[in-house]
Image (cartoon, rainbow, N blue to C red; front, side, top):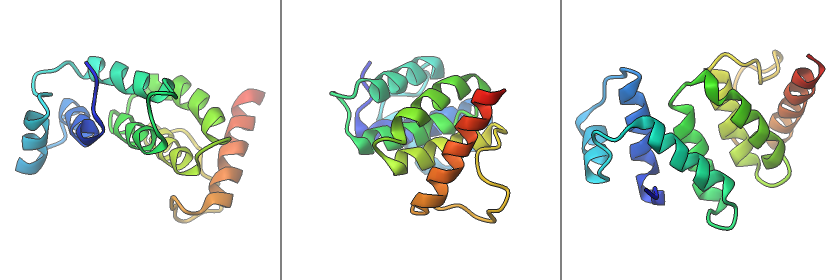
Length: 141
């Protein structure tokens, strides 16, 4: 099963549905339109992770959207994967870094600095600082 780029939002909706988040008609129809209704969310997760890690097959936009979608799972089991990818993305794509940081924050990881009151994908320097501090902090533990 290959997840095409235009189906990545439907994957995010599927993850939310699996968590019990009420979805509207648009989200349900997107899941159905892309043939994801009844599909095991774990299979979709594996496919998105494959899309992310196969660099030659995916572009940065696919990776960014895939991190966003995986973040909707709010699965602490993804923390090691997100940490590994954060190290890699710091060298190539700060928007992907931001998506990973949000996903980590959503599972309770203290990834953003306590001096920040808000976050944005285009706060590149602050996001870099916080991501590097987070990774340094976990390597010391």
